[in-house]
Length: 471
Image 1: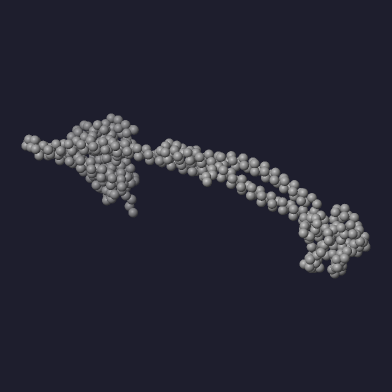
Image 2: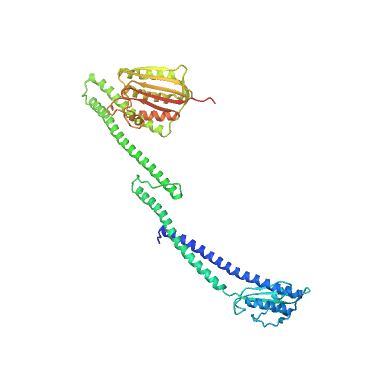
């Protein structure tokens, strides 16, 4: 059976209040009733002791004392009688109280000087009464006692009236509590319902929803956590969409890049097989096949290299490397390519500067960046710098090429991104993987890489790698 949360809240609140009011009413009624009987008992004991005290002093005759008190007490509807140890009445006034027969236990209590007190007992008397029996002694010897009784008139009526007032109070309190409970439960249910509706929207694929949140209570904190969850899902979906778009672009790029060399290779091989290529052109055809094959291998290797770095499968062999040495090697490897585009490579190493890193990977970083600089620079300069700062070894690669818009700088680190999509046939970083690999490798060295560039003003890459601290 399904019961709405609103009704559960209301029923639980009203149930708790009903039990609380019921318990309080019983306790209060019992307290008032006992208070009435305790007061009446105390009043009778005081009168009884006063009578006994005067009888024991003997200043006045016993009959006179009894008659004096009888006139006063009978007017207050209090009956009393003095009796001896055989329960014979000593006062001449006719006893108008209930017939009393003490039990053996009650009689023993009187003899040892303890009072016997009854609150009303319907089984022993015809009306509700409070009865007190006190021992009577002469010269320390037990000679009888005094019995006082008074009907408890109006007690039940008073308790009944109090109960009625309590009932009215309970009903009013329950009505007010019901309204407050309904209102508060409605507020909480509405907040939970908003979360439920938002969750349904998220499950149906809408990740732009949000709910009001606060730190006031657990529901508010839950709403805050929900909003954070949706934000993360949104970010993840955007990233997934971005990755999917990049994957599509990559597949298109790879298909385009592989189709051309494969077509060339296939054409040359068919030409050689069918003797369609003149003998003078065969060497040229074989060189073309070799060149296109290396191009395909480079594509595969770049992808494998990136995946190894991304999955932390690359182990660095850290050592101290002279900056001048690595920059000179870089210049030697790329000078021919730079010259083909009319560029010159200039190195500016600081004396005795060094870097702590993996030689092969650092050279890979610098070659990837330098190739990009050569690619986008014509008849200019590529400047390679190396120096030491307080906590870092700094490597700079600056060119005088075409530069980039500031909005483009953050995109160059993305896998498969190409700053100039029209240059897809060049042999340097053709597949947009180079700078992605560069950033991953710099991070593996606990370093950081930044780019400064303006359109038509050239580009400068700055790499900072922490200096090894002596242990």
